[in-house]
Amino acid sequence: VPVRNFEQGFPAVGKNLLEWFAIRFTGSLNVTEAGEYELCLNSDDGSKLFLEDTLVVDNDGVHSATQKCEIVYLEAGEYGIRVEYFQ
Image (cartoon, rainbow, N blue to C red):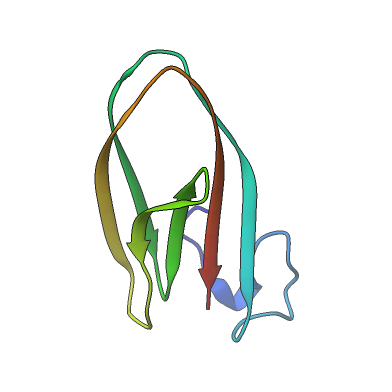
């Protein structure tokens, strides 16, 4: 989600939802070449990134905009990805 004025609400959730909500994004990550990858989350309040149900980046907690990154080695292939976020 790009930097924006959140008085407009959270994208795709509605302009009336400004605080006290959580969102779970799910999808897949297609890795075409094995190697080390840096995965990052930047969030104002908590967020977590999971690959195949394994917590990879933990940026949880109540805080101002903070970026957390982890370097992981991934084989080529498709991975289930989940990002959980709360405001």
